[in-house]
Image 1 (tube, one colour):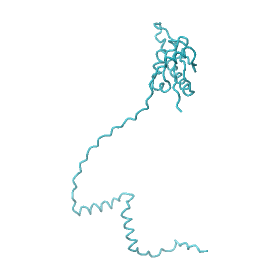
Image 2 (tube, helix red, strand yellow):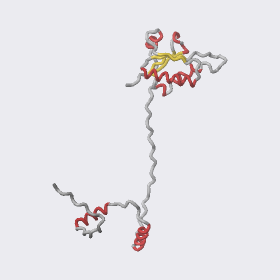
Image 3 (cartoon, rainbow, N blue to C red):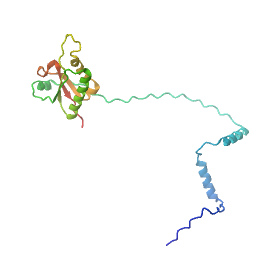
Image 4 (cartoon, rainbow, N blue to C red):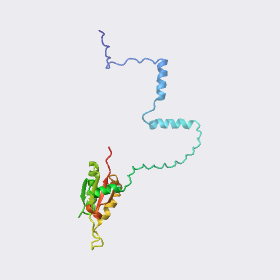
Length: 197
């Protein structure tokens, strides 16, 4: 078994340094040329360099003309297109009105404010989309045309506009006025877009 090398005593006075060989010196110089200082030169070294430069003749370099950079226009990121609305086909509408095709869910917006109706309708359609429903019935109420209260029938006018908005079009394929048996002018058949996946 070999003995471990003795540990040098660092407390003892240091020995005389040996001189570098030519090969070691050449290696050291090549490494030193490639090294960049971490910090800028101290002020004294700069002053010394400046006095040295003053002693040597200085040739003024011609200024290089700088071309102004043309601003780069940001390319707008295309938004994913929302599919357009499509009308419910005649055959499907006939099946719905005759009861041959099931209405998967109903929502009655009677008596709600516009803000609440908008929120409730959006949540209802999100659930219908998530649950994979195909046709839902949205009851808006007919409102009284030419009545004393101008706010009556607001939801009947607003709901089709809401369904045309991009956030609703991602949930809805199309919509049409319901058959008289399902509420006629005061209700809409809404075809729900199928969830991908």
